Length: 425
Image 1 (spheres, rainbow, N blue to C red):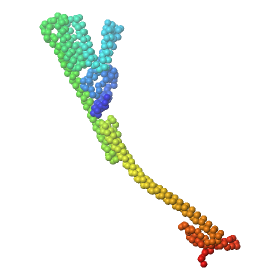
Image 2: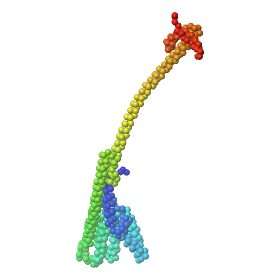
Image 3: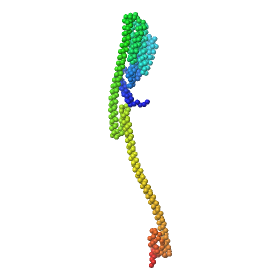
Image 4: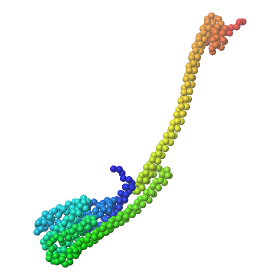
């Protein structure tokens, strides 16, 4: 089943509050001496009508309580008489009394189940039929006399019984049955000489007018009285409902004012930038749906604010990453240039090293040739002759070229060689 609409829930809540106020007022005004009868009503009457019950349902509940009261009286009478049917002189009525008790308990059960119309109709019919049978037994013994005409006044009780347990209009049905019963007895029952003389002198119409008119008057009066009482009860119930409704309206007005104040306070906090503000309204308050929607809206706005903050943070981090990437790219470019320069320098140094090795080898060769030329000049005592090859030894070779080597003795240091420059002279 789906959730009822908000208006329906508010209406149900109002009806429940009205019913609760009425019940509380009834409990405060209840007489402590009536608690047993209240317990009896709770045991044998149907549950109280709901706050949304119609006037007809409330009237049926009132009749059910009245039926429960009548059944309690009948049950007490039956229980009081029952020992006489078992141990006393009325033992011949034992079966009738036992049947009456069983019928009473059955009527109580049906009344508890809400079959008030069925129970009222049954009780009224049984009571009327029993009274009819009792009058017929009375008339069959002594016949219809002038004094026995007063016995028809007992039929008024059937009308009172009917108008109490059934809708007021049913009393006219009972009145019609009573009138037919009276006419049938006056026409069909054997009459005493005194009654026959009265009918002959006064006329049948005059004799029957009093009991029939009495039935009509009682039926009309009881109908008007019960109808008026029913309307008065209805007005009293409506007055209680109006008073309770006024109290509910005042309570709801106070709740509305408090709810509006809380909503306004929350909106002011949200307008000042505090999106974490919430309205603490409970579900049983009138504006709880508005508060729930506002709290949901503020929650979404707060979530969007967090998303915006995260977006700005990510944008800032992205900008930092972009700058770092740009710097990294520049560094990689510089590193590549430095690597290229280092590689070129390495190649150049290798080339220079190779050239240096070649020059060193050439120098070694020149030195070897120069040493050989010096040794040859020393051995053969001829001038030093060695070719120049365009290297660093060329100045030395040029200064030694064409000179002689003469050894001379040094007393302390051994033999020395003196280079003498050769001239053509």
